[in-house]
Length: 106
Length: 409
Ligand SMILES: Cc1cc2nc3c(=O)[nH]c(=O)nc-3n(C[C@H](O)[C@H](O)[C@H](O)COP(=O)(O)OP(=O)(O)OC[C@H]3O[C@@H](n4cnc5c(N)ncnc54)[C@H](O)[C@@H]3O)c2cc1C
Figure 1 (cartoon, rainbow over the protein chains, first blue to last red):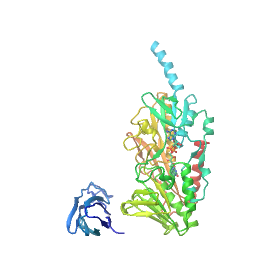
Figure 2: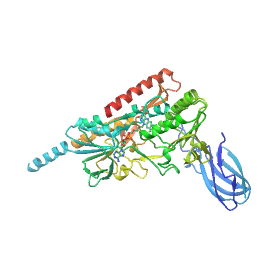
Figure 3: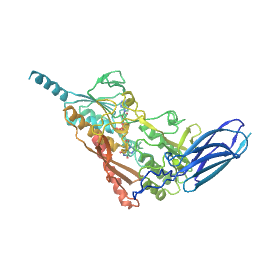
Figure 4: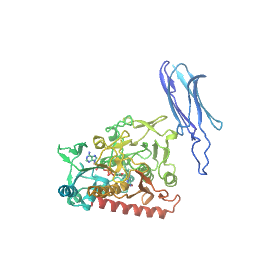
């Protein structure tokens, strides 16, 4: 399966408020937990998530170690024009996942 | 001298004629009431239960699998009444912890010295949009009461071969966490043998669950291609349902199904809130020795209505709690410290007719909490020989027979 799931409407009316949901598989290892050998498991989290609508940032957030594994994000935005929404997650250990969806605005 | 001689009879009276009301004639309440009477026949014990027939849920998934009669799950209260436990066949509608009274459905008020609440769970009809009590007539939960099991069974029987059975499983805490996965196995068994073109779709609000690898092994080995589970991290959390279109909706998809089994979030049954023993979570916290509420004095809460971290809500534990609590109440009434007992929980789960997996853990009261004794957990081995699972099935059958005889026989 894909690493990330996106739920955004395929079509919307100009000016409508729409909800966008995104879920990604990630352990969100805090860096504060000892492993079976007693040594700390190194931190491995997603640090940043953003969504761009035709290149313009419409949502962004910074993650912290307190956020649970497989973070799920839901946000609202206003539909302006047809095009593409690009999602980007970046984090520790060169983590980088992109996903995009097309949307038609009438 | 004079004060001592007047105090003594008062104490003696408290010991002999104490009034104990037990609300809820399930595994925990019934066994607690009967054990109280056995330990001290002079106690006045009333068991309050509105239903004439109790439907036991352990083994109820076998009914859905089509290899057990619902009648084998049902028990009456005749034997209980013969024990000289007073049986009030009505619901408790309110508790006044300050006045120490319980109001019954017919308006009578019972005074108590100790109250035991063992009312089990209520389904939370506001937690899952679209899933109302009326919706459950079309999308059964089959999680409480005999009629719901019969309804889901009828729907499975009526379904055309090739249909999709959808299960929506809520996050913990729920009663019997492994029960949903056992159900998935046994519905799959029915489909495999009677409707082989059908599928079971399990939409799960959890990623991990008890005996997970054993269940997953059963699905791949016994029901290949038949069971599909979508866990939380793959979008399995059902966020609403629509009974008019038979649709289960997650954050990412809508699934139209032929038969829907929706297991919604749960909470302690309503009487617990009335008594002021349920907290903001909807569940009841108790101290680990006599199961007395942490919120109200002289009210003990048992079984599924409690939330004890690490202890899953099972009939096995509910019955143990009923006995331990009865002994603790008798000790307390006699002015003694109740003994700190150990509590065992065993979960048997059918993966197919005659094949059972099991996990057992032992708990002990420690620093105000009930804690699992490290290393006490014993679980059926992965890849065990079929004879091992057949042996566990025999054990499970004996356990159910012994337990129901002890509680209702
Ligand atoms: C599908 C499924 C499978 C299961 N399988 C197993 C298994 O294999 N093994 C196992 O150990 N457990 C199993 N369980 C769990 C088990 O059924 C429960 O943990 C057990 O029934 C809890 O007992 P209890 O006494 O707390 O509550 P219950 O058995 O639910 O009894 C509560 C009683 O209180 C009564 N009541 C409620 N409100 C009031 C009121 N206001 N006044 C008077 N009476 C009231 C109810 O009518 C009911 O009779 C399963 C559960 C399910 C759903």
